Length: 545
Image 1 (cartoon, helix red, strand yellow):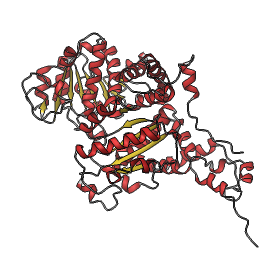
Image 2 (cartoon, rainbow, N blue to C red):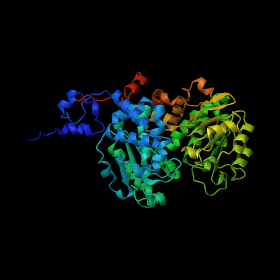
Image 3 (cartoon, rainbow, N blue to C red):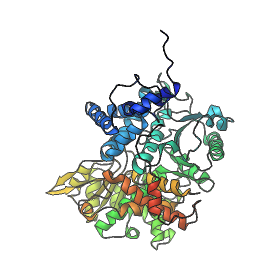
Image 4 (tube, rainbow, N blue to C red):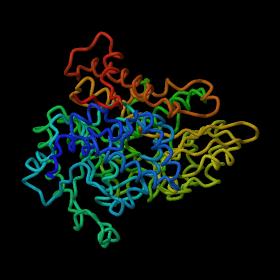
C-alpha cells in the first residue's frame, strides 16, 4: 500500500522553534496540517507543558545542566522557553544569565548544540553586507555584538563569548518583554590571543591572533555601515569588548548611530541607581561623596563619567565633580605623570602622591564610597573594609566584579568586617545575612535592571540616538521603585521577581526623556504607559488556521 505524503507545512510548524507547540497543537491543527500521528495523542495546555519542564529541571543537579536543558528547549520551542523563564524571573535569571553564564562561556565550544545568531569574521572584509543579508529576518531592531575581547571577569575567550549576546538578548524579552523576533545576537570574530583556547580542538572560532585596532576598526566600520543599510531602525548594543576598544568604539559611533555599550553605560546606570538608594539610607547626596574606584577600565570609567554627569546635574562644575573621584588600577593610583594611561583615563589622573598599595590609598584618601570593578577576587581585605568603617558611619561598598569568585569581597565579609555598618551591593547575588540579630538583604547591581528597560524605551519610541541622560533617567526610575522596608534591610534594588513591572515603569520614564530631548521618531502617545505595555511580548501560542 502506498504511503500518503505528509504535508511539509505541518513538519515545518513542528520543527520550527518559533511555531512549534508540541503537544499543544489542537486536534483541528493536527488534522489540517498533517500532524496526526506525529505527536502523542494528548492535547495539552501550555501550563501542563510548563509543569513538565519544571519537573525535568528539578531532576538536574547543577545550574549549568539547567542552562543546557533550557537552551535545548529554546532550540525546539521558543514560546515554551519564555513562558517558563518569565513565570519566575527570580529563579531563572541566575540560570540563563549571571552567574551561570560565566561557566557557559568557558564551556561554550563544548556545549554548543545549535548555532544561533550570526558570525562575521575579519576574513569577511569587503563582504560583510552580503553575509549579513543571509540572516532571513528583516525587522531586526536590536543587535547585541561582541568580539569576545573581555568577557565578564574571564578576559579574552574569543568565540566562546557568543554566549553573552545570546543571553543578553534573552534578557530583553524576559526582563522587558521585547519580542524575540526583533533581536539578533552577533559575533564579530577577530581571533583571540588566548593560547589555551586556540589549542582547543573543539574551539569554534577563528584560529588567529587578534589584529591591531588600526586593522580592527575599519572592519567594525564596515559592519556598522552594513547594519545601518540593512536594518535602518536597528540599535547596536556593544557588549564585552576589550576595555580601550569599548570606550573608543562607543565614542566613534554614538553620534552617528543608535548604539550603546552596556558594560560602560548600563553598568554605570545600575551603579548610579544603587548609589541613589545608598545615599537615601545614609542621608547624604552624591555631590558630597568621595568615591574611590578599584579598577579603572571601561566599566570603571563609564561609572565615573555617569556619576560626574549626575553631580553636574546636581550643581557641581565638572572640575569639582571629577575631583571627588579617585581611581586605582593594577599599577596603582591614577596620578599625573603616569605614562601608561589611556586617553579616557587622563581626566581622573590627579596631582597626588603615587602608591600601588590599595590599603595605603584608602587609608590616605578616606573615601566614603568604595567601588570594585577590578575583577580581582578578595581585593577588599579585612583591613580595607575595617578602614572604610573607621572613617564612615555607613560606608558604601560595592564589590561589582563577577563571576562570584571575582567579587572583591562577599556580603558576609562586608557586614562582619564593618560591624554591620556597610551599605553593600555586589555584581552577583549573595544570600541574605544576619548580623547581631539584624537581617541584611545584599542587592545585586545587575545591569538587567537598566539595559532591557532602556531598550524597551528605544523599541517603543524608535529613538535615533542614546545619550547618557537616558541612563541617568533609567537609574532614577529603578531607584525610586525600592520600598522603604527593603532599604531598611540594606537592599538597594527592586525585587527580581518584579523585573517586568520594574522595566515597564523605567521604560516609561526613559521614553519621556527621549521625547523631551527630541530623539523619538514617532509622535508621543497620549498614554505612554499603555502604549508601551501593548507592545509587550506575551509567551502564548499562536492559533494556526
